[in-house]
Image (tube, rainbow, N blue to C red):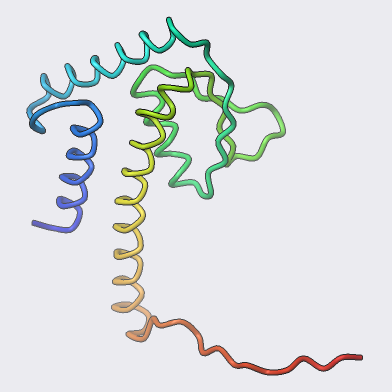
Length: 145
């Protein structure tokens, strides 16, 4: 199994964990699981008001993953004019963010980041130079004026 296939399998397992599916299953099972999460969101919206959240995501990969995850559950991510591209706004019940959205995003992001780090290191070491260790740190006293 390639590392990309392994990543895809890990992401499906994380999705299954948060969607409450017993197995990873086929398309129908995944669709049903997604509907269960949407139902949780609808229940949360009935008992708690939507809160406007500001999410600051460090890079384009994180933002792209977060926005896609929001859209999966029919949430409407946005940002105000002149906000940074790494900012995502979202109106959603707090319980849904705390119990489903943020934990699922965090788990998916961790796996994706590990994959991207490994792929980047491999390509650099194979195509640029084998030694990809950090630059040497030199301890030197700074002169004061």
